[in-house]
Amino acid sequence: MKLKEATIAMVVVLVACYIGAGAPPLDLLIKPSVVLNGLALKSGTWHYSNREDYAVPASEILASRFYTLIIAALCAACGIAVGRVKVTWKRLACFVAVAVALQFVFYYAQMRAFYLPW
Image 1 (cartoon, rainbow, N blue to C red):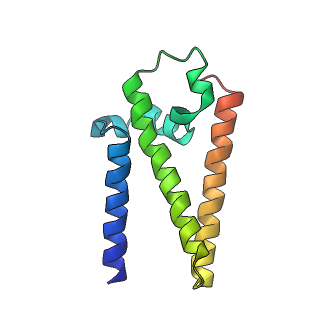
Image 2: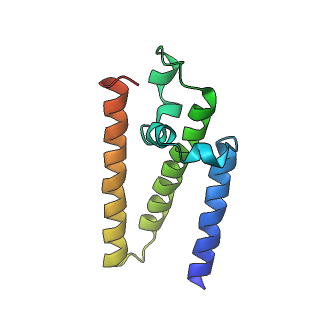
């Protein structure tokens, strides 16, 4: 029964992130530049709004917001799950792995923001 509840919660979060991103076309969500911009957190950074990077279409920036919202939802889910008292070694290892992966995402975003041209 818990698997069913987790699946329903995951679908609800995905739909909420999709709506929060402005319901972009699905073919735009799998475009490589949109995925990389989402992982670089480009849609919400100060650097995008204050640089000369206005050649990227606004629809791609809005679609990359989907991945930024997914990362935020993943951080929230890990924080809530670790905050619970019943943490087994398997769960803790999974959360540490997710935290390390998210750290790489954030380092990538910083490198793109400060050192690489958009």
